Image 1 (spheres, helix red, strand yellow):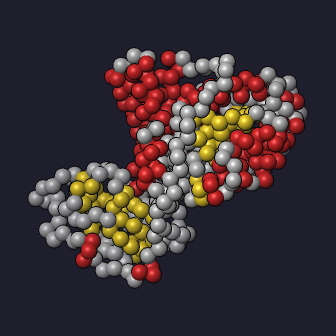
Image 2 (cartoon, rainbow, N blue to C red):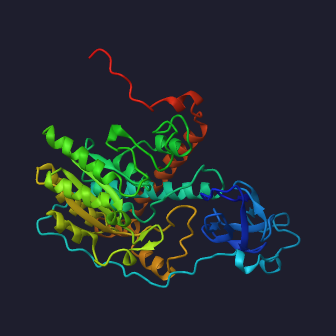
Image 3 (cartoon, rainbow, N blue to C red):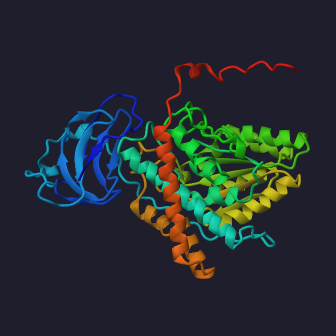
Length: 451
């Protein structure tokens, strides 16, 4: 069977893209995730990967061709057979080449950031996750990872509208923090919100429908992947502006304090957001007001393509907490238990009226900043070093080795996650489009009646 390879939507503002290099030849076996070809948009040069294992069967667009997102550029066959291999294989070396000046491919960044050392747990810190809690954490982390990977493969087939900002590798942060929260506590997320929303218990159907822009989406199809919400579980609308949720979360926490409620707010943001004004203003105000908010910096080393070492001279973002009179804690963001321990302490502190905490989780995103970013600024050695500390693999070893959980039980959890994901995608794709009249809804506040 042949499978079409299409040009995915790479976030370009122009209509056409240009193929600048084929990395695979006709008749060559390829693995899922292997780079097939490079395309040049009006923004950057991006890699397009194989969405499944197979044999590159036929190339329809040679180097130098212009095509539009969604165009079929080649076919991938399941296996080598008489009808699955092109009779005249076209090698990349004989394809017409563009002038060198037209090809703008970033060199791979040579600097390799060391993996963080294990973070010592503060004396007396509670172990909030029991064996059952760790199993639940494993199930949620697997669901996040498989969901993001499934979306990624659909994106490569041109079946996901818009672009994606994914969190593969960062699952332990979302799950470790949200496992320390109650349902009525609030979280504020970023342009990379899927993991946070799933960890807080948001509807997978509603998230998926929103990504597809459908009426059944959590924002009625108006927000897309960067503006997810599920108020029923305390997942507030995610904010695509870097660092913008920090003062908003502070405001919500101040509201809880003024109402004498013991609810807690969490603000998630990246290392890049710690360098903007909203970070400093939000943390200072929260500290002065003793607001019940926990600030969680997901330090994945890169603000888009900018390495953290070029943006700040301090080693830890958490060091900045001292300037505002609040605790600053560093956690191993690739270890869900380590994250949960520090989060449980910070949440308990906030709930008791003792004010905010800044938690810095040292983590790593396996994919580029967005699906239009091939991540060529990162050294392969760096990526492999972080993969060795994969949070899901580590938790699996802990469950099987230390807690005696059978491998079959974990496999069943993974199968259930995949079933849920496929059902959510089917729900989204079968859902109706928003009616045109809905574009005028939720623009202005409606007048309250009978008060």
